[in-house]
Length: 400
Image 1 (cartoon, rainbow, N blue to C red):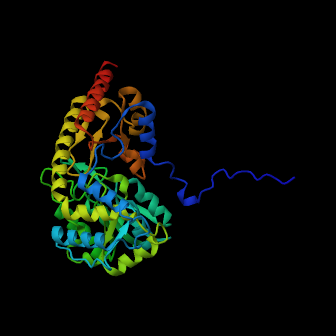
Image 2 (image 1 turned 45 degrees about the horizontal axis):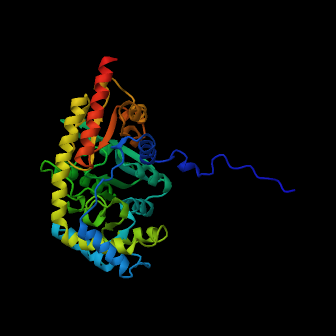
Image 3 (image 1 turned 90 degrees about the vertical axis):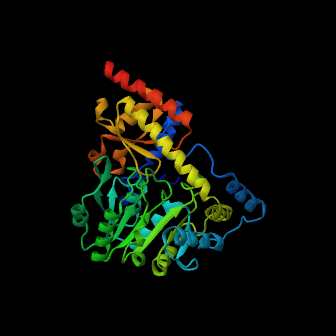
């Protein structure tokens, strides 16, 4: 009788052992199991433009269901190139400088994996979107965080700390603006500081710009690639999901100089090879025809943001007014709480609402332990019900 092998207690490479189930999966499962309102994960509860959805259906029914070209369908690559030129004055060759990915998450991952390896370092602004640290770990590189701190009502960084984070081993500076989870849209002066560091230290920038259209109060999104010396050293990542409220389509793109895009292609082709053809056709249509719909979405989201802010402040949170994205950062200390993870796990029972604890986006959780993140990309009646429930949290805490 053969010997039965004992199962491995942790069959995972060492560099990934600090990463378990994503916080988004955990909190969304908690919302489902408790019947709570999910203001945790950032996905809309309404669909994108109907004509865009119809274009995807037409692509499926028209037979576009086999492998598309690995770099992406020509019509989407051309539409992306035209969008960068028309909106930002950045010219890219759709044949060699635009590459389609499975959402922005893969675009960032393929870029980092192509540019950083064991012994290298990647500088990023913290709190970081959760995939960044995992991607850097997959590359075998080290993450060097630069803290974003509240200042005059918005989160920003100290230029001296950015410069101090760069070492001779730094290869990549990873920039997310508009920033998830803080809602910051970096100003021209802040971006000029970042560009100067990249040029001075010969760094490649990878910029995550998925919320490029979703900015508020007149905040201007400016791509880092538009600054002197940056086009030739910047890979810009964006996607269709946030712009057109189709997060499940997972269709993104990377733009940059041909040598850097070739490096991304070398990695990406062995991750997923190609991205869904019908979604690409619909995305190409939307980039050319549905930007007025996006303008209406942006205005609606600004109103939703204000609706949520008012409710959080009434409930006793110290809420920061985001300049972009789907999210509000809320300081829980005025309510008497200090541990955001503990509160987030208890919140469904306390108020029937789910949020995301910001501390999971830090290398040192204590740096963000007093923040939780709420999403406002929901229907007005959902936001209203959520803030009504959260108001009860504040009253109960006051009585206690």
